[in-house]
Image 1 (cartoon, rainbow, N blue to C red):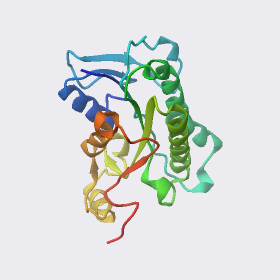
Image 2 (cartoon, rainbow, N blue to C red):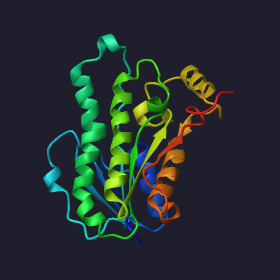
Image 3 (cartoon, rainbow, N blue to C red):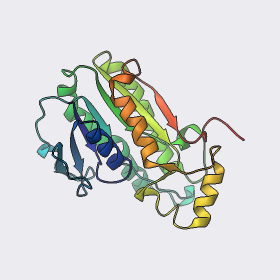
Image 4 (cartoon, helix red, strand yellow):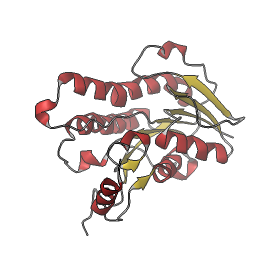
Length: 231
């Protein structure tokens, strides 16, 4: 049994990842502002909003085999409506929260064999999309952060990033709020369907586990082909 920490493990992709890790017999600490969806003997929960104070309250850990930082944002608007505050908020949740999480975990992870970090980007970094200025800028910073940390932490801790396309989670509920929008989104993808949170969680589980022990500094596109092909 290994010990994993999932930030934002109560909803969406994070919740799916927590469920998968528990099914595999691991111990999981879910650090989230929301109550946990799971009730399991190997699951512990710590309440924290990454945009607020309280980082000093994080528990001491004896070992951390993997950390996934799942909090994110989707703020779509034309440039004329983008403010500096929009950018700051996006950076706070997507980048600075990840920074704080890894600074907390790294002293333990560097002593844990084959430890790994998984962060999250978006397909909109690789493929320019209208109205994605805020989120693509923040997630682009996450991709640079990933590669820099992978170099700095090698060979003790692996660091990788997943770049999904639009996924059927609570975060994307406004973009998928009716059948017409769902159908249009599915049609835009070469695989002709919307991503499910389990699709992304399984990729994260792979990057956290021993199966990916020779993988670091990578941005894995789990996006239905959106970033690389046209059909």
